[in-house]
Length: 565
Image (cartoon, rainbow, N blue to C red; front, side):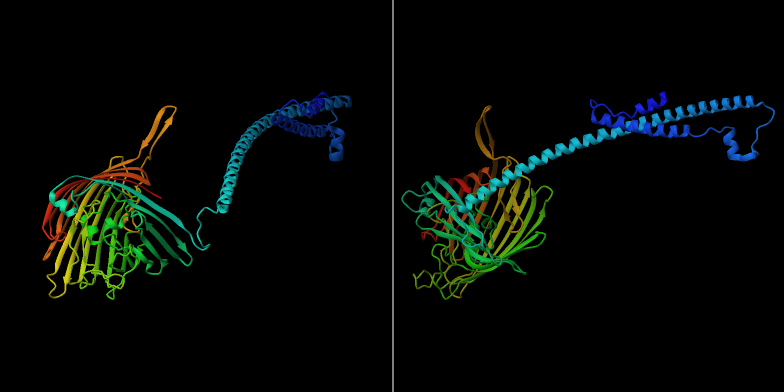
């Protein structure tokens, strides 16, 4: 009875003061004991293997030996029953001990699993809290964006595209210049004109504003106006076209850059020096002409090309050309980025390009004839002293009797980290009508090296084979903090360029120009910078500008503050 009471006591419900895990463990343990106790009690309730039971089981075949008296047999049977009970009790105790050990081990393992499960639950709860915070943050951002959109869409002062099927992007740039002429020879004074020669000047070199975007049916457009001339505004890029065409890829119709002269194809937003070299500007004055041009590149961006047909007259200041002789020009450029270091993000690359143009000017029309036309001969090559001056110091004048001319150009770029090396050469072969004079050859070249003191590099755009936007490692800024004035220095770049052009040949004496330019560029951000140039140069034997041979040396300093957006 005591054993039964003890076993039944194991099945009592655990105290409410215990924790959940302990309660579960104790309860399971007690259930195991209770089941085992019931099994044992059932076994105890069965008959012991005494004589009557054996007799009933085995029949008359089982008979005890007659040597013992009945009372002795009863005593022996009782002793055997007691011994069996003791043996059974001993076995039961052993089984209970083994069961207790098994239960203990099972409970220990179960408790470990419970603890692990509780840890996982805690982790899940923490993750749920973090996810809830993220969801709340996203909801706040979405609410803010919704408010901004509602405010934007309802604001009638904001510029929108005029058609739901089109997009519009606004862009612009402001270049504010200073130019000074600290020293020059008398011949330079006469080339510049005026009583006192070249004068210092402050001016907006560029002040542009434009829009561009996409239209339906894979069409694009761009209009950009130049306001640096004050009341004499002009347009620059003005075209529309198509993207994603078979074979031709992109085709543009309108005022756009002709495809030669790397320094002209580069945007003024990214060029290293304030003004372009003698030969580049002389053979491609202001670069843009009215024409039809195709742009393309290979899938791996190793090759890019452009080619087109243009009118030779610069019409961005007047808007039209008038002459039965259309003075057409066919031009093309093939370029390769033969090396581009993908691993460094383009800090190393190599570029080479060949360009050619065939032009057929009207060599018989010496001057403009007003509105009725015809417009004058466009066979003329000229440039300022790689700075902003009042007149051109190199100038062939309009070459009478020009039948046609060919332009050939070679260009190369090698960029290794912060160092960049660039060189370019162009040659023009002028063919004249019989009796107009000898055929002519003009040429020029330049080379420069630049280096970022702060470690940046000149990015390269492989689709077009041109320079891309410079991004300082750290923007220039200055702010007051509790620890004093803190700031960033931006990017600093030094550069040096040598330039040469020879426009003297046959009966044409447009002059020979030579210059050395040293530059310092301070990039405040990717969209703002300051540039400084010092130029030492010379002009030799220019007879076309004044009718007499003029030569001389000069020094010029220039500074530019610029932003673009």
